[in-house]
Image (cartoon, rainbow, N blue to C red; front, side, top):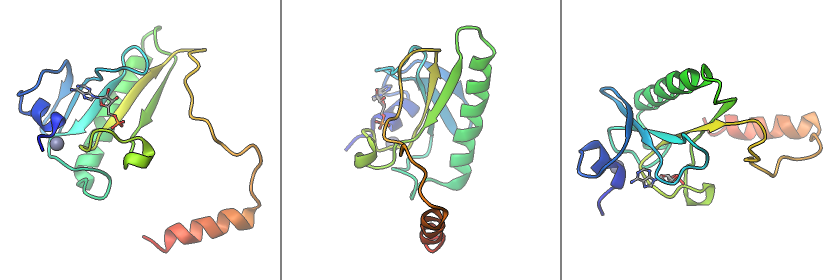
Length: 136
Ligand code: AMP
Ligand code: ZN
């Protein structure tokens, strides 16, 4: 199956490019969550976190940081969210890794819900940390 983001990298599909270097391409999202919402992708295809070359991941973050910090210098943008969805159950729809750069404006009402209203006991957090450490 043709990957739409690989097609954009190859210039076989249209996009509105913001930034490009050897490793990454940044372009406007066609269904923006907020005005100015854009995506940073590795040029080399990788489906998600497990397949992503760490250097490409670093290049994605470097570009997202540069673009996000530049947007913050404008009076139009009050904040930035960086977001990567990994897996369909996390909301991933395009299976070529990408980092969303989402400009935020005061009172825009966008938000991830679901944070626990109470803090778990430290022992629960310690157990959770140990479980993740065991995977590394
Ligand atoms: P995700 O849910 O994290 O996989 O996000 C995929 C994003 O890619 C969505 O925000 C889409 O609007 C965006 N998208 C899909 N196709 C294109 C395209 N051809 N050009 C730009 N953005 C796209
Ligand atoms: Zn691809």
